[in-house]
Image 1 (tube, one colour):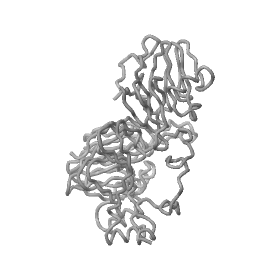
Image 2 (tube, rainbow over the protein chains, first blue to last red):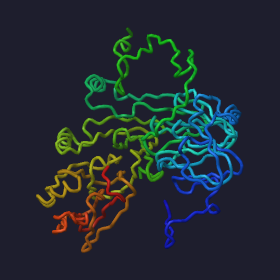
Image 3 (cartoon, rainbow over the protein chains, first blue to last red):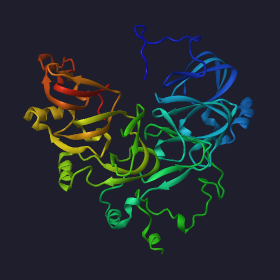
Image 4 (cartoon, rainbow over the protein chains, first blue to last red):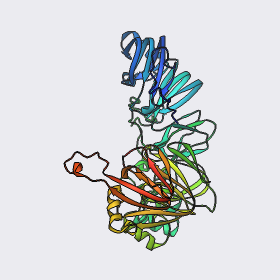
Length: 266
Length: 216
């Protein structure tokens, strides 16, 4: 927990005492720039010391950067490059902020949670819609609703609590509906009496890696990850010819097993 | 002990075969092992009559029972979570503050009027508890949600504790509570201190207070 300095009142920071590339408190992160660059999401800088320039990505001379760090130029307009020397404070609506180091690794994160990253990392769209993947070596800053907890697979995670995962190649859906089977369960499914537990659907992770959870089921606003090419075989691309098995139909209640026709094999 | 704190907003519960947990629906964040979550029609323990009682008392928060073997992580809405260990005494708490509790605890509903008659009912209205509150009795752990951090104030005989009704979370032990009103002419003319009503708890036990006056 936070320790309060006895008589001193709130800690006063100046450019010398601000931490270097570390958290100032749970909700603020300080980045030191020495002629280097950082990428940050638009509007997440709250204060800075020194001389810095903030430029939108993708205009003129920063074009090369986009080529090396953004491999999907379509959403580069949501990002800003900070350049210069000094110290910069990052925060996002009083959400918990943390920095993470990647060493020649990969990490996939929900698009709304990523605040800033070093240009030595490459940002790519994940195949999973709404997620971004960071590849390479470097530091990045992410926000979460409540502290982030690291978990080892095998684990099943509530979709709303998932922040991201590193090195796990197998994010997949998992459905629990054991209580919907049997006679009583059938009655339950038919009549809707008893309701659903709200936990029928999880994301399942197996294999070696790390899964990042936030301590709450309140999602952060999603950031556009950019449009994927409209071609067959691309998830979310809309180019997939919908077969009879993919009929959208009416939105299904959680826990409902499937349409009647399908259940009877029609 | 079934619950361990991971951080201030998240707890981990160990589920073993034959031991049942109850938790608020939708509060599971993640789990390991083979664990099943079954929505509970009755909203907790007891038979149909208990269920009806809770429905009438408006203390029927949707619960699910958690069974199997493994570990489950719980958290809800970014609220702070306090784990309370009960050793045979009774915890009085609002049903919607319950995040999870062990199946070894006896769940019941209490009429506020049974503690101090009409004043008890008035007290229920002021604290936002309504006319009824939920009781948990026995041995086991309860995870309670609160806005902001929670601290525990012990109540010893002869030293009553005064709590802002909005910051009250729960209490346990042999505690009598009454609403003390310090209404004066200033309140009537709109120049009150905003602290006209206080909850006075006396006896022996403990009261849990949240660091915020916001309701869940």
